[in-house]
Image 1: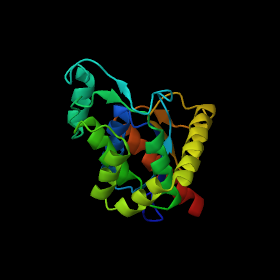
Image 2 (image 1 turned 90 degrees about the vertical axis):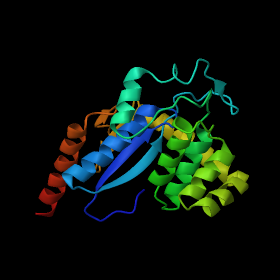
Image 3 (image 1 turned 135 degrees about the vertical axis):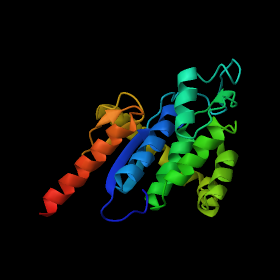
Image 4 (image 1 turned 120 degrees about the vertical axis):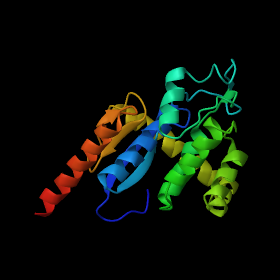
Length: 216
């Protein structure tokens, strides 16, 4: 969860690391927040698109260029992301989600780490194993906390079990695809996909209005 003013709109993003549109959706939400002048307090929740992927990853095949469809490349460029297709393996994301759960429990802003790992995987071509994620943690100033987590196997296993259960619960709540966005106190998904910036602005303003009405 991010550290934000009390007036911020709570936004829950159900996401998986291997989903490039989740990064695009985040960037559009951030743009909408700036344009609407509405702060957002983001919480990331897990979803596992390929839970049976082996820990060492699954070869993707193809070339870097062929791994990035033209539509995704254009959408990324529009929000300042250069999807490179350099990573040649699809990861199992359970350790990533367990790390994000740990950050949430410790009340550490998840989004900088989320973006750092997105960048490592989608643009720099780094396979997101624990050493690579620790480097991402170093970039955003949380290396000691994450290093401690990775040294405590029982705690890591606890978080792995928790995020597996949370991902299953997301499916029961109606999440069918990611990214999925919920706003305010409503845990039901408002919409899925990296919608246009105006859609995000509308939901942010709607939730801001609700809060004003509740206070009046």
